[in-house]
Image (cartoon, rainbow, N blue to C red; front, top):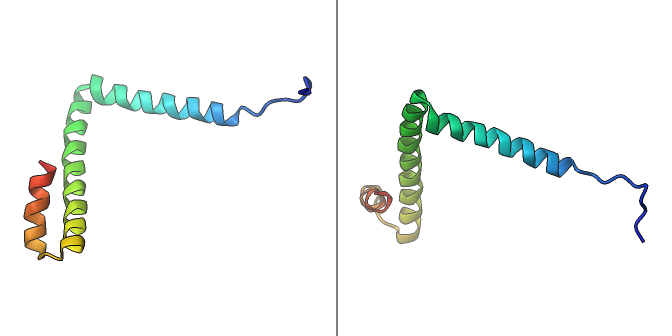
Length: 79
């Protein structure tokens, strides 16, 4: 039988709620403000660049292709 006088630890729940509220605020800013639209475009561009670089590295390591060939393949894969 559980001890009714023992307090439960809710720090994970509180931290989760805090993180979710910050994330919701950031998403609301990105999608509801005019400057958020510009920020979203620049983030999208940076994410594509990062994905292309990561794909280039993976393709080059796995297939042992030249850097130029790997970049061309990665560019097509990211589009």
